[in-house]
Length: 167
Image (cartoon, rainbow, N blue to C red; front, side):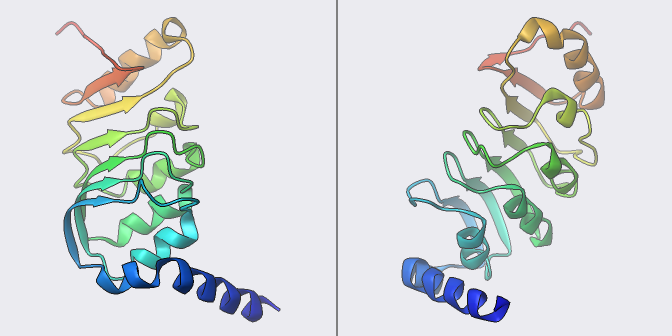
């Protein structure tokens, strides 16, 4: 039964993304999946098969989840991940993000990733900007200081506002 389900899924993916998959390249400056309706982890895995590196990966407002972030570990590099509004992303993707040392920019606003999850980030020496949202900025002030200590060379932008820290 599982094989039959896999075959059905593959046919669906070929129908939806086949032509696009044929045109996929190994390296991209800007790879934008925003315009694809109902774009999820299966579609992402299907389209990313040939990709080896991406400067800017735009996943904003798609239905991808943690499994898509896990796939990025296998790439040579990913410099930017723009995942604003990807509600399928939560703290369980943090270990995968931490395995992408080439990351310079990470936009996680309006995801299910919390400040507690972000405090688990590690191994990101090149991260320059981290954008995320928080329900109550006053409640996370202490944790923002911890995050700043963890990522001292990274600009933290919470709910669209750059955070300032005393040196």
